[in-house]
Amino acid sequence: MSYATFHLLFLAPPIILLWATLPQSLSSLGGWRAQWAIPLVAAIAFTYTTPWDNYLVAREVWWYGPDRVLATIGYVPVEEYLFFLLQPILTGLFTFQYLARASGNPTTRSSRGMWAGVVLFGGLSLLGVGLLISGAARGLYLGLILAWACPLLTGMWLYDGETLWAHRRVLLYAIGGPTLYLWIADATAIASGIWTIADAFTLGIAPVGLPLEEATFFLVTNCLVVKGILLLLFGEHDTLHHLQKIESAAPLDG
Image (cartoon, helix red, strand yellow):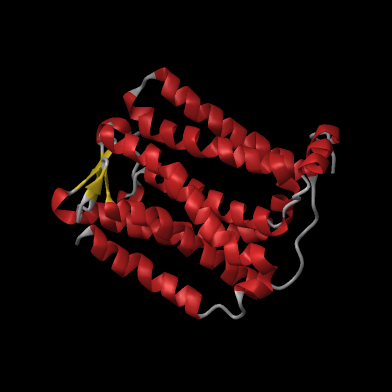
């Protein structure tokens, strides 16, 4: 199976299905913010991921079968650049499907929930940096993932973790569904030889053929997509007011 075939089999069909079955228009779900949410998040994902992924391939943390891709730009196959756009589209459409069909209002906002998110992703950021500083080859891939993604997630929780906490049910389903699906797709691609993850740079934990690092990558990237969309739709956009609120909030406030 080629990388292009992978897109045609695993990404194009669910994207088309999710778009075709949206029960209402994006504008009705959030006006212009909903209409532009997926394109904006996809553009940011493409820009932020491109240099990072090129570095991974240059370091041979992962590589692709040369007979499985059409061409490369830099170190990365053109199909991989396309994936940078298709994953946010897939996860974004899944998020809007859930928002359109979910019943009930968001749960209670809580600064305690906000600080829990800050502590969790701040800790994972430090873990990633620590793995890189240690110089241990086995921790390189996981360290690069955590140090690349988790500072952004920490910033999201600092910016408006109360909104994210209030929409935690959306986070659970909108992140969980696409992540599980992409885990299955990724394990299939690895088994098919489309891309290979270097044993030397991973911890060697690979349940059902999916390395822990790959599972972590899809989890944190879907966190970035869904949280970015929720903050754009529902977040506190008065930055000065929000900074004042953070400064005055105590971590244990309810």
